[in-house]
Length: 342
Ligand code: UFG
View 1 (spheres, rainbow, N blue to C red):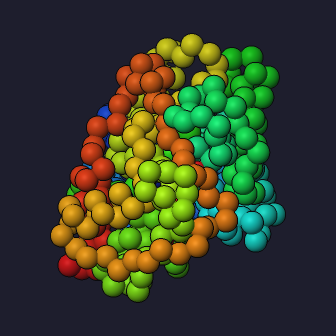
View 2: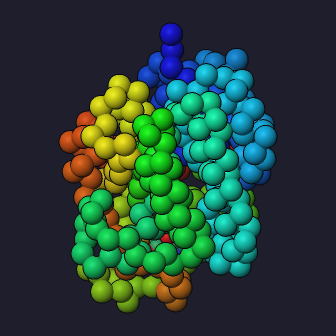
View 3: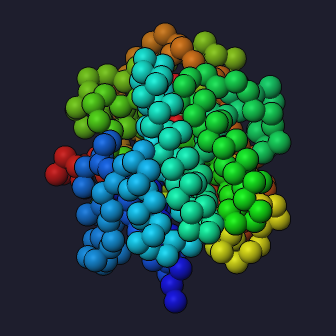
């Protein structure tokens, strides 16, 4: 019988791509989302890509404890991947309680529900944000975590600890994997699912594509006076499909009992630093479009340089990022054009 994976936040940017990869790898998926930060576009896209018109969908807010538990009783869940969370760094600074309440309570409810049914494999979507401004790059999983720069970042650090402690106390019933994402960008090659920011995008690539299509007037490059080769910040941009594939490897490792510890941590990145300027230039070149941009002041809270050492994920999960940044930028542009009906 097929194993079932519950994907909370499964209609969002990362969740929808992970759902596609899981279905294509032969898992059954239950998508759960409250559509608070996305519409049905990606859910419909997932059904189209996979030919699964009957894909189970639960419209639920995981902050509702009873509703979270009901899902674990309704289905036999072999693993849960938890994405359901708010993710805007700036908003989290302005509205910290909204972030602490939503991101922590929903995850604790998932863990409680999983415990109530006798345990589960739990994969949590963490972030490179837990490394803060690292003293040494690239970062390995052993690089010390730093105090987070925002309430959003704090929720990632706290959820990591909540999972570690819950796994430890569960006597083997709950197993955990923490995936620390670097900068996920791009879209599915079908251009049927992708990132759908509400309002003005916070992240670089959606801002680039919206500027190129004419929705935004001008891209601001936040600072060119950083101590980096071209003065702009360095990041590890990881293709969204590559990132999604890492989840399939992680879930399979849990299901097959191959974990070396009850709670494991993996960096999900390429190991390749790319500057903001390089990314902007690559976007223009591969897509043959001219981008209106200007150099602006630094954005408060940005780290200068961070990229992953993905060796552990490469060796242990058997996963490796495969897509070039150029192909990923083509997919991001194809998605923006698809949205614009072009
Ligand atoms: N940038 C610009 N102009 C923009 C947007 C971004 O120059 O309009 C620059 C930023 O200054 C940064 C780089 O592009 O140097 C990447 O910025 P993003 O906002 O796309 O990504 P971040 O690295 O800031 O954030 C990502 C995730 C967060 C996570 C954070 C820290 O989106 O969820 O990494 O790990 F918290």
